[in-house]
Image (cartoon, rainbow, N blue to C red; front, side):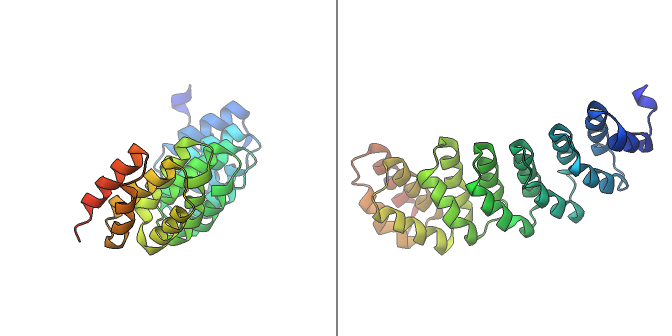
Length: 222
């Protein structure tokens, strides 16, 4: 019976069992509080089955152990977009800045799930270097959820890079949705130097833009 299996038994199954056994072994081993399993799970990230690789990442993702960071970064190049997305989420939990540039690169991934995970993951690694890629998604990504999450991550990053880049975007007279996002970001950041821009946006013909800009102005105290 399964309850009689030892950790060593599951380690054997993880390496030599069939696909279902390897997947189940990864799940069980991920619930153990035994550091011995970590190297074995890391080795299993090369499993030929994407379903097993997914389960292995899930098993490792909540471990705050620096040994998992570089293997997760390697998984960002996996052929299966589900694995790439899961690796992004796992890296976000580590909050290790070695993952920053690889996550920025994935903002251009052709898979929506992966781009969305990268956007959300960068909120845990706030850095101005992510701003250009996030702004590109805010303006141009075909997925509405990604545009929304790009705005939320830009709020988290904030700073001069975010403000300066968004001011440049406004010069091109972007769509109303983009202007509303920018007004929301400026209002959240509350930087006085964005006040004049927000005042201009209060006169925008789009009600969503103008009302959000009014809210933004109210958030700036000087």
